[in-house]
Image: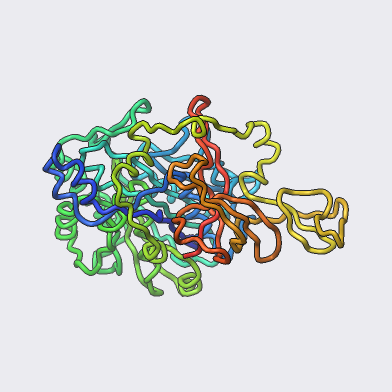
Length: 481
């Protein structure tokens, strides 16, 4: 039996009411009033597709060993690097080890389901594959995409053991249907006429894939407990429901109202949401879209109940939020307007790439050491135990801090140090099993920080080095909400 063995998701802490955008840009394009409803998830200034994929994968790996992963695939149309593999950065942050296959999937909004199908193909031969999809797309100011685009990520672990949703089959169609397009030199996508995209794109192509799968496996729409239609246009979804003969209660919530259009991650995030409330025996149909469509068919097993209570998933992340009410801050986070950062902001102390290679696990995966004699954890990795009662030499084993919970021992809110979201907050973290780190805090306000609060680790962008085409990543502390 091959299928999904675990799931996870990530939704950024910041949410922006779309009316905030319309109040600032509606004067230019009043037609966007129809899109100015609900809210969307907005990645923090130190987040991107890679960091969100890591967070989603950590959620997916709750209670599981990372050593068992044979491959990691990352799907997105907003990958930070065009010529440096993004998936391997996720793999190293998870400390999966070098003996793993990694690959990026991009170029189409159905890349998420294409990566999932590729992972399932590998799993048939006995492999365990982590499939991640995330988006951090930027809509041009004044466009409808500025309102609808949302940020988020989902991760699915596929394999042959402990399957919670068996993969029963798939049917794919491919069309060079040009709806939205963007070259590698461009930041914003171009769209054709919206009615054309709705009627000739979403409505016909998704229907073609759905009917193809139903005929191939001799199914009926009534067989499915949930139907996932990854389409950001409500009118097209309504028409598809009617044309396919589905009932409204079968349709999985698209998360458009409170997260937004998450592109390649959308079908996988909807699938995670469906699995959170699925029952053994439920059949789930997943329909993606982008230069064609992938239709995937899963059946939930009795194993589902073992994983539904021990992770945040979609529901847990939706409950943790903070309003982003300043449109100017949103523009700064997206690097859409220049900002006077001052002398401190212009000075960057980048990590030398040779150092990153030599000390990669310590930087990327937050791996330190633990004394085998007295059990004292320490970071960075040491040869001599820091415990004054021990001081053992060369008696160390690897110890990961990234999956540990700590306590904030002291902190500072610094208005002199540069931060894209001032003040800069940093402090000393004491970990539950021992060890102390000095880290930046993120996804919090100074008023909400207190000595003694629990914190978890989150993989984030530490700095940007545009002259060298480089982002530096490290771990930050996030207060446990």
